[in-house]
Length: 212
Image (tube, rainbow, N blue to C red; front, side, top):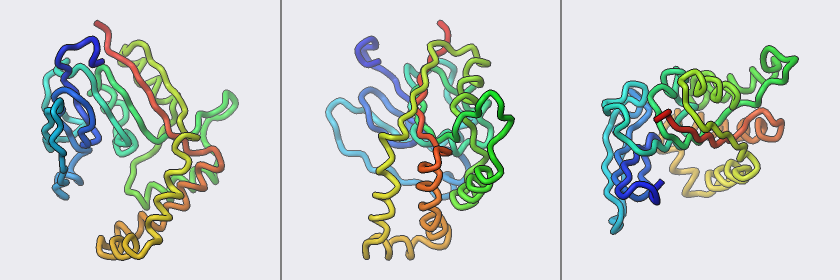
């Protein structure tokens, strides 16, 4: 994108500024507004970044203000996926999904639903959707050049590494200081690994753009 736009304006919905251009960051919604998330930015010569607390489902930005919308691990937090994709334009969407259903299936297996429900309760997530569900939602908004790629194998080491970090003395004491919600989430990390191993949980990258 930076090659075709002289001064790209990017929107980072994950709230972590990490690319060139002018980059506002918007958080997921009311929970993070209450928390008052702090962002530390290193001074980089080519980066002009700001952090704006906003509801990603009701963005305060005008239509077509941004050349690119970057959403890293935020889609799974959105309770209204259809409204979420309606707020996007030219996007890179990186998110957790459950597996696609086969043509003969109408829903996930009962044990798969049970596992996802446990994860949702632990991480305070709304209902999950599949990659195919996201693609259908994007198509319903007339978005073009929709491409989806399964990166599950690439990020498979992530959760074991998180658990390994949590089991250090520093990680353990940090979790205890953070309170029950963090402890509850930490105890649920093996559930994510279980979902990966069973092929239920997918880590997906989706790109698309609005029509001209």
